[in-house]
Length: 223
Length: 214
Image: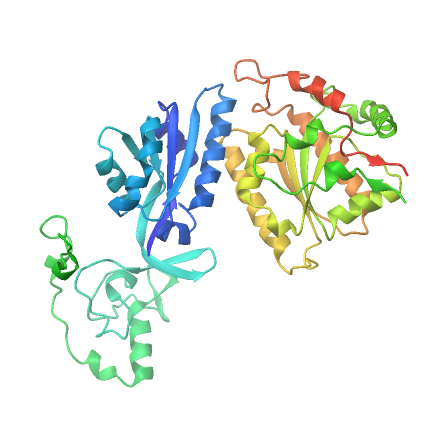
């Protein structure tokens, strides 16, 4: 899922400084799971901002709505009524959600309440870790299901490097060396032969090259 | 057998109604009288706002603090009438939204009272409450409301005296901090230094948190 982190409330307050009718929009997908942009977090932020506004003697309304997904136009369309009444929309979705709302309502000022961080998962309640860098050319079949692009600090393809110390990265003792993990896992699976092949430099054209990426699945198209 | 004020105490937790709801409920005359005498004493010395009667919402776990309040009643203990008790099935039921809503609705102070650490009826509810309280304290500091207005306490059902102490302690702390700037009647331009407009109505409403003799 997409993992995001909340912007500091002071920063958010500054972003909506000129608003008198604010709408805070939550998203029911990734940011609900990582507990930064779901229905509950929307209410917490709304309450905190209302307190700030009351404290400062500001008049204004803060409304809320959480939709199933901010990254699909048909759900974003459900916001129409409340967006119409608002002079500013604060999205607690990921960067995708913010942009889809902005695209759907071109005459509204839309601002982000989160910093979209990475593709990751839940390692324990309240802790999320990065696992995928969206490079567009997956090589997990070569590395025992452990991604060296994201989990190795240098993203090297023929590791480990000389900075691997006792199974940890030289960057930080709390970071496990991805290549140590890969070696241990492949050894356990009896597939160390995979490491005999020298991997050529990665083809990054599927990643950030050539502008924004687009994926088309024609058989899924209905028009 | 004495019991605590039922209307104020047995109210279920409701979003947005936490702070305001208790205010309209009247106390029996005898309890109100007892409370009036105590209010003067509770004013104490050394307060920055000696005449200010704070509204404090206490989220009390059924298995400890709520029972301790019962015991305080049985023991005929006096404690400030500023406390509005809201019973929760476990302190772990208390959510950051509920805490913030209480402040949003005008509470001057809020506290969560859960079981002693390691004694939670649901094993870890009080630890979760502790973390949530810490998180909301940070939010309160960030939005300029002062995190000290919120606190977490741990006690057992046998600690009637401690319950009364906590009520005193929190009332005194909030009296030092003064009225919440969010409280109805308070404005940013004229931050109340003594008794805000809402205090008079509070006086009239009587002593919701008071224990009722017999």
